[in-house]
Image 1: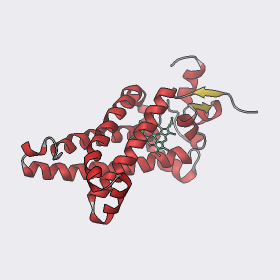
Image 2 (image 1 turned 135 degrees about the horizontal axis):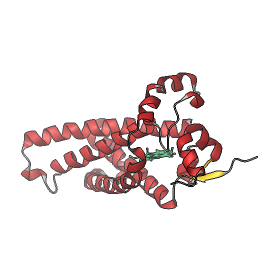
Image 3 (image 1 turned 90 degrees about the vertical axis):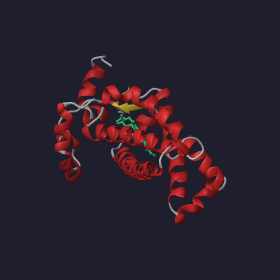
Image 4 (image 1 turned 180 degrees about the horizontal axis):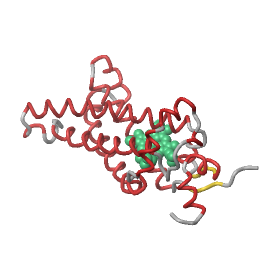
Length: 209
Ligand code: HEM
């Protein structure tokens, strides 16, 4: 018999998430194209070098604003709790044994998901703040060159960390069976919730938000 379904994300939250993913891919492609001559060919995907350079900062700003929407919706569920530290402490066992049932009980998100959420947040703030400093069309003329150079370096580091974070995030979403459906249909099975997020499951069954 099919396990009953629980609502995990609304249509608005899912649209917001996939709009951020679209911006991430476009900002990533244009960013890599500008990062190294070996990747310059990627400019062909965005209408040539001029368009790539014009569009990249605007796509980045769109991503930041859209992520801000997600941040405001999800920050409450990503506040760090003591069970998250316990979960993270046992994460290596989960990876080697693959048995989620032996993990400390967590709420809507586990320690790994929360860590990724805060890494995303930090990276997006650094990307926006540093990107503005060397945006030639608007602000760079009034920023000292040494400061622009530091900003370029931090921008590249934040982008690198964000890409690594997204790889971990997407891999986990695909690896943990039944998770992708949460962001596609908006629902998860009650069995999935009970197994991976028992405290969230308990609240859902009790009718709490
Ligand atoms: C192709 C890439 C991606 C896939 C397959 C994916 C998939 C998912 C899935 C399945 C969930 C639900 C997890 C759950 O409810 O337990 C989720 C949540 C989330 N995703 Fe993604 N995602 C991707 C890229 C991104 C990107 C680029 C960002 C932002 C930079 C992002 C930010 C988030 C956030 C903030 C959540 C809510 C979970 C939390 O707050 O910890 N995702 N994603």
